[in-house]
View 1: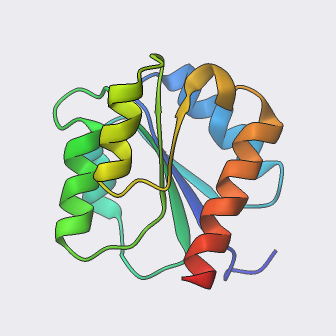
View 2: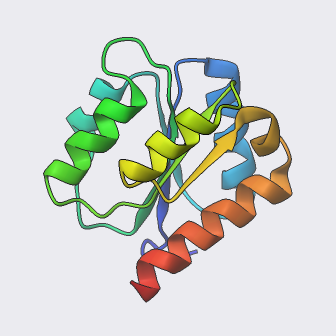
Length: 129
């Protein structure tokens, strides 16, 4: 893979979930970076590079919605896949209204096919958009 491959960022306060997602994504050849908080991600994120963000809704400090809203307010079009341990139509609708590419339950994303297909679709949308 070249250095032009998109980076998949994973923000989840659960280190087991974060490491599992990063490992599955890295197995495809995409570089990953994992963060335990929204603030840690914001401290290092450089807009404009090809990337996708897999983002937990519930985080300590700034939650996933706060991070997504901050990114959109800055004009950042990074495709964001929001996830939660809860399946709730209200949460999914709120994720969509905040500009998320998709919302998935964490149990769904435990299936590598679902996870990787969702990331591929998000990255393809960014290229097409």
